[in-house]
Image (cartoon, rainbow, N blue to C red; front, top):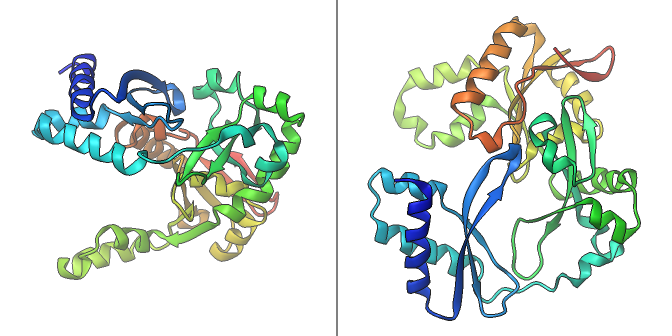
Length: 301
């Protein structure tokens, strides 16, 4: 089924399920890397929280056999759980003193986000861009994100550099980095590993040299490479130079150079995984990076 047909049917069904008190509208939303998702925006009366529920995954579920009625029930449930009864007074956002302690940064691809970066302040980092957001926890909203645009800087009377200084201070504090062996991460995903036999455990043992760098929420954790002293400490842990493989906007995979994998082989792997395994909005870069202990910096290979 085409997305527009499906979205229109969902819009009518959700409106009928919620009643006349609610406004239910369709909205195309531009996400990271210019990806356009179809959203369903729901608002009750004069509530100032209007969650956007993205329908792309629901269409996929419908095409895989989930009933339309179950999809509508799930959407209504998500809305009631996440938004009903919650409200945010956003007047605070006009005062930089009230927001400066929760200004953070995240890493995105500079080339794929040209349109966004025309409207938003950012710091160029190799082929990436560190852009800014306010980490919102008001009004019962958890993990909320308010992007920062040039218009906000004009109201606040601050520069890109001042914004960056706040983000460098806040982001590691609010979202501390986590470094884990690849084997440990896979064990978390395979919760019943003990029941799967020795062969699986043996294969995991072979990839111990790989580590994952992300943050405590495992969301937009690739920016941890910008945390002060993190890359230097990692060099001490792995015993020298290492590759930084951009797994997604959420994490980097670290591989010691001493493991002998060629840069060309890793570049091919990155491109293949990005094109076939990673959601387009989560792709960070097709580049391969190297941390040099001697130069104490990251470079593109």
